[in-house]
Structures are given as C-alpha cells and as structure tokens.
Image (tube, rainbow, N blue to C red):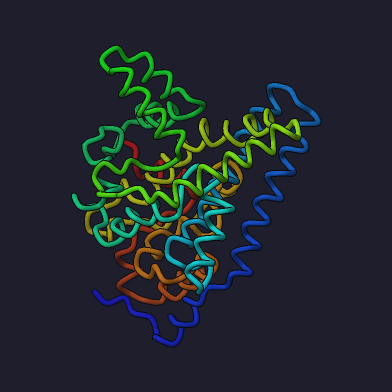
Length: 317
C-alpha cells in the first residue's frame, strides 16, 4: 500500500508557524477567561457546573496545541517550542513537555502494539474491549465525569490506601501512566514545574483569586478532563476494523464535540497525523484533502462521520 504526497507539498505543509500556534493559545485562554468572568458574575451551582464543562473542553483544545509541541511543530526553534508549550500549557496542568514526549513518540512508532505505552495500559482493560452494549459503553465513560471513578476507587476495599492515593494522584497530574516506560524524572524540569505552580498559586492567594483558580481551573482538569480523554482515546484508536490503516481513525467532529469535548484544531484527524506526523494541526485538513485523492487511503482508512456519535455507533452493538 502506497500513500505518498509530493515532496514539495509535504515540505510546505510541514513548516511550523509560531504565530498561528500563539493565536490558538491566546484564543483558548480568551475563551477560558470569558467563561470565568461570566460564571463568577452569575455564580450559582448551575453556572459553576457549566463553566467546569466548558473550561475543561478549552483545556482539551489547549492540549491539541501542546500535542503539536511534542512534534516540535509550534516553533522551528526547539527550545522556544518547549518554552511556549511548557509555560502556557504543560506547567499550568502540572506536567511537562518532555514527560509527555517520552511515551508519545513510542506511541507513534509502535502504535497499538505491546511496545506502545499508551496501548499497553489499556489492552487488558475490559472498558476498551469493543463492541459493547450501549448501556455498558455509557457506564464505562460516564463514571469518569465529575470524579465518580475517584469515589469508586476510594470505596474499593480491595485496594490499599497507597494504591488509592497513587490512582488519584495520576488523575490530578493529568498524565497517562508511565509504568511501562523507563522515564527518569528530569530534576530541572520538575523544579520548573513546581516553581511555576507555587508562584502562580502564591500570586492568586495574594490577589484573592485562589478559590476561583480551584473552581475554574483545577476542578475542570481534575473532574472533567478524564472524561474527555477517555472519549478521545476511543475515538483515536478503538473500535477500528482490523484491516484499516495503522489502527487509527480520522473523525469529523460535530458541534457538540467542539464545544463540550474540546476536540478542535483538527486533533481528530488522527490517522492522517499518524501517517504524516511532521504536519502541524492547522495544516492537517489540507493534508486530508490530498489524502482523499489517494485510492489506497480512501479504500483503507477508517474515516468516521458525525463525530463522537459516529464513533459511538461503531463501538456499540
């Protein structure tokens, strides 16, 4: 099977543009601050709940830009690439670019194999066995909304308190487990992450905005992002026919996906990204249009219309 693109076209599409990436980041933060402003001025349980959902979706949209950074597609300058993504995305979410890059590159090289650190933690998990009945599907994903899975873990008598604490800490850290990957914590990176957050929290405490930070930043990340990540993971690599290319899916997101799941910046064109990971998110639609002209791609790609609802239909009986 040959899926090739003209070398000149590929080179043109692969050029990073830091100004576009900065625009993406600024737009997402403008939306986040707008939501916080409205929710804070009309604060009640309903507006707080809606804000947590909408901000969680914007945090996921920021993750799409961070994903570009993993492949050095935010800036040609690698140091600048990591500085921008760390300061504006990774550090505020208690992680770092290098840690995510460690296993993500392996995920590309060993997609859905026993050497794929993203897949190895899911392959024996019954929640990722498809197809499922609709009731089981909804049960498996909605337990990750608003901390239900944390409560379930705390109430699990077969787990030790150490296991429970570790599980919750992983959810709070917003990173996938790295047990299957040899990763040595970079002391400088860890120091930078901790220092950034201590400085941010100190500033928020001094200005009297710490509780807003907890409600409108930490809560979305801790209580809603796990739900989005679960859906995103299924959309990208599960419920896919065995004869399809690279065990990956390209999905056309619907309006619900964009607003409430933050599946923006062409992140759901995941198969296309796996085929040509050198192309930044803002050029992936152009790539997709070119790929559709290739017969092998068109006949063998898993392309799902109607967004996450289309994936839901493909994954359920």
